[in-house]
Image (cartoon, rainbow, N blue to C red; front, side):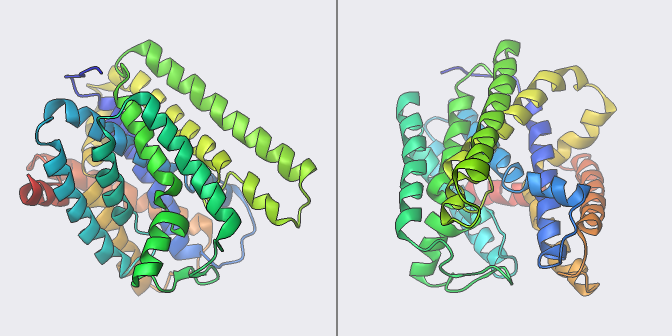
Amino acid sequence: MNHISERLIGLDVARYFAFVGMVLVNFDIAMSYGVQSNGGFFNELIGQLQGRASATFVVLAGIGLGLSSFKIKNKTVNIIVKRAIFLLILGLLNMSIFAGDILHYYAFYFLFGVFLLPFSNRVLISIICLLNIVFFGLMLSIDYESGWNFEELTYSGFWTIDGFLRNLFFNGFHPILPWLGFFLLGILLSRALLNERQVQIKMIIWGLVLIIFSEIISFIFSSYLISADSELQFFVMTDSMPPMPLYFLAASGSAFLIIGFCLLYSERFRKSNIYSLISPAGTQTLTLYILHIFVILGFIDALGFTGSQTSSQAFVAATIFCILGTIFAFAWSKWFRRGIFESLMRKLTG
């Protein structure tokens, strides 16, 4: 393992872009889900971001945990468990108003991740493969749509033990199977020399290879080898729901590509105005995530825009939020070292 003492600003930039992608997707879900789509650029763009931006964010979380473990080895487990509990409570509060919450899943990624930290790369890779294999097997034996009303995007029984566990591990938006694998990929990456140009270029190349490979295989099977009306189409999808192995490869490739690019090019912008503006938002994503949920379900709902707009209108609204959120984080950073919820979490958990 290596210890990178100097902060990798590319990770802040990548976290910012991943967050922006998540906001675009969530605004689209809140504002245009159920509206008849006519296609178009914005609809296609947001469709490509679904499951990709959030996967990148999870990989970055794994990198963060891996890097932090070099600094606080003796305290890591205790601190992370406390923070997992904090995220779980916050996430469940979010779930009461927004079905697309990711924080309660994060709680379990960190909880499992911190106990898997001591294992070797080979073991972690084996676990990642096993997560995908088990999910694939469950798809053959369990009804993936159980609990879901996809027309209204609601999940019945979430607040029961059976429903919660089914959603958490199998058919939620970001289930442990196989999404924990993205977190473990981040831990693996944290052990690489991320500050070296050669490693960054390899990440970009491997990212492109994974994306191209998974999309080509998916196209060949879905277009030529499997009939269009066959249920087997699900097994060769690169969409995030259900998260089949080809999706996992494609989303991993997207994460490698984005993070690699940000690491490669961010250093030259370290002293630029652009970096100074967006980097605070990249370190305050928890606060901005909470704020964007309240904006979606408060302001947007109050205006009567929920479930009645086009993807282009959702894109404009999300862009406005991202601009205002970036400015807010920049201004906040002039007075405070951390964001509101980042400070609260650190104060409560150490």
